[in-house]
Structure formats: structure tokens, C-alpha cells
Image (cartoon, rainbow, N blue to C red; front, side, top):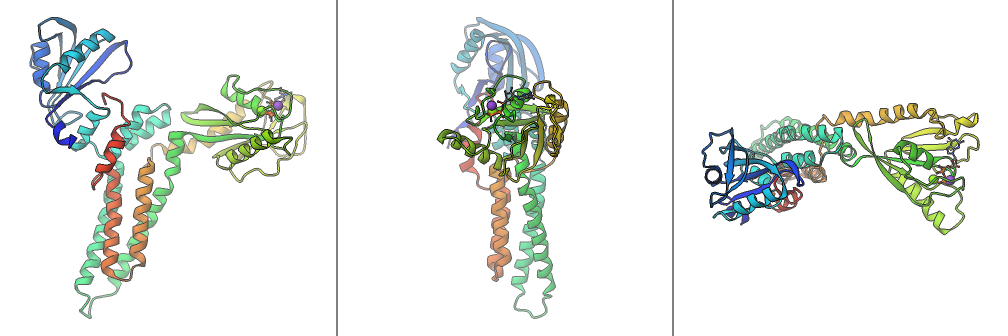
Length: 439
Ligand SMILES: Nc1nc2c(ncn2[C@@H]2O[C@H](COP(=O)(O)OP(=O)(O)OP(=O)(O)O)[C@@H](O)[C@H]2O)c(=O)[nH]1
Ligand SMILES: [K+]
Ligand SMILES: [Mg+2]
């Protein structure tokens, strides 16, 4: 309903960030854009041209001087006529301008994400593009930025369209076979070939869906857990890697009771580093809970930093089966033992820390590189991919050709929903509401 009304509304919002700022950008989109520009500046601009002009309210009083740019639809972000006003970024200038715009007939403040929603409805962006744009706006690390940009170039639509075309072709061949099934001379090898291709396609979809975890790592961070016996120097290592005193360090075994987490940027990749309680036979209730948390966290980690005091290497029997860097600590004490370490360090003198950072970066690198490849980047995508896989399974198991063809149709519909071709109305509100106002 709202979409029908909004097609005639002209909307506006502050699109730049928190005020005050050097410059503020106010965006206007809709059929009245050119007229609004005319009323504010007294000028008519050619599409995609900018002008420096005084902006005046409806009584002719000066609001500010700034730059105005006009975009004629469909060659604009939203696909509609658009205007961008660049004014001084003061609260008073922006408040005045917004109130003048709001007083004009047919104009109203944009809802969160409404400019992008119009771009989607006008076919300027598909749903995956919209989600990638939202990720780009919230990107904090280099890998997140590269990933979001790569995801916004339409590559997902390309492969899903290709897969859909294969499914549709398979369906057509099966339906053709149905039409001729009364005739004796239909070669059985056709359907064998079709099902072979479908099986192969299903494997490709599976491999693609399975790579979703890389997207989680790029977006939410590589989960790294420091694990070891009490007093091994886990919290000391945490502080060295975080380059600040986040964790309490004492010579008392059992100092750390709970999981403590910091975010690091490791060569452009977000890393969630967790310090944990030392693992041993617990002395009491609180420590027992802490130790359980340590092991639970380590079991779901992408990487464990297993720290051992080289002077007094206590055994931790239950290291979860997760990629692990074995670290010998307190190298400054000239400790030596026969145990094997990937690197030996001293959190006290800093020796070996650079080498450890190098090993950590090696672990991070594959994920940073993955940021340039095509992988499903939302849980929503992953679910639809597995739904497609499920429908293909049903098609493969179905003896009735008619029902098998229908399952293939459902599979291709699931792929369509990723980029928003088939009934996605129910999704739109949740996707667009995650944008800020002005985007
Ligand atoms: N000599 C020396 N002492 C260290 C080193 N790293 C840590 N320590 C000392 O070892 C003791 C324990 O350090 P923590 O960082 O608290 O150890 P932890 O593993 O977090 O201990 P819990 O939280 O109790 O499990 C402290 O007295 C630290 O000063 C090191 O590289 N060399
Ligand atoms: K300690
Ligand atoms: Mg500790």
C-alpha cells in the first residue's frame, strides 16, 4: 500500500552524518524534485550539473548558500528525479532547510532506507545489491569494505540466474518427456543425462552454500580463543595483542573467571579475541562455570591460541579439535622443555610476539582473500540455497515425473528469492528498516 502512495510523494532527508559537520548533504527524490530546486534557488539545472546558489525559504529569506545538483530520473540513485543540496553542516541550517522542505505541499521526510527502497522498486538495485550496500555503509575493516563492494556488483544474480536457467531447462526436458511418455521410442538416456546435470548442479549449490561461514568470518570476525592452564600468561598475551590493559593479570592461578573479548583488526580482517579462565580441576563453583565457558568457547572457535608456561607446562587434556597455534610463554625465564611449540614468546619482554603476529596473519589471510570471491553473504541467502538443495533432493527422489518437475520449479524459485525476483514483499520491511534515514 505504502509503495503505491510513495510513488507520488517527494521525499527528503539529511543523508550525511551527525551534525555539526563541514558539509551536510540533503537528498530529495520524487516527481517534485526539480520544482523544489527551482523554489529554493530560483534556478533550473541541467541533469547531472551542479550550481552554487543561495537557498531561500518561501518568503525569500536566505537560509544558506551551497551547491545543488540535479539528477533526472531514471539516471539517478532512486531512478526518480533527485536533488542533492550541499550546505553548511550546522544544526540550525539543516533544521531550517528541513522545515522549509516539510512545509511544501506533497513533500515529506523519508523513512529509514526509503531512498534505497525506491531504487529497488525502480529496478536500480536487486535485493542482494541492497544488502551489500547496507554492509558497505556499516563496513569497519578493509576486508568488510572489499567484500561489500564485491557483493554489490551483481555477481550473485549472475550465478543464480545461470543456475535457475539450468533448472528451468531440466524441467522443460522432463515435461517434454512427459508429453511423449506414451510413445515407445523415447530414448531413456535423455532423462538420465538431465538428472546427471541436476545432480552436478546441486553439488555446486552445496559447495557455494557451505562457503557461507567465510562471510560470517569477514563480517562478524574470526573467532580466536586464548586457552591454557591457569597462570600460563593468557591474560598477559591478551593485553599484548590488544595493546592495552583489558584483562587483569596477577600471579594468582584462577585470576580470570569469565570470558573477556576484544576486537582487533588483523591485516584488514576483524578478529574477536577472547581471553578465558585457566583450565584445571576447578576449586569451586564459580571457577567450574568459568572453565566450562572456556572450553565451550574454544569448541566453537575458528582458531585457538593454546598458551603454556614453559617453566611449568601443566597439561590441559581437553583441547577441542579446532585449528590451534601452540605457544610457549615465559621464554625470558630461559625455560626449556622438550615440548613442541609453533612459537615461543615472552609477554614480559615482547620476544616472539612479532613471529606470533606473523602466524596469526597467515591464518587470517585466506579469509581476507575470500572477500573478493562470490559467496553467500547473508543467513537469508544460505537458507534459500539450502531450500533449493532440499527441493532438488525431492526432485531426484520423486518417481512421478510431474511432481519431480514441480520440485525443480520450487528449487529455482528459492534461488530467485535471493535477489528478489519472486514474492519477497514479506522481506522488504525487515531489509530496508536496517538502513539509516537518508539512505
Ligand atoms: N616471567 C614472565 N612472567 C609472565 C609472563 N607472562 C605472564 N607472566 C606472569 O605470569 C603470571 C600469570 O599471568 P596471567 O596473564 O594472569 O596468566 P593467566 O593465564 O591469565 O592466568 P589465569 O587467568 O589465572 O588462568 C603473572 O604473574 C604474570 O606477570 C612472561 O612472559 N614472563
Ligand atoms: K593469573
Ligand atoms: Mg587470566
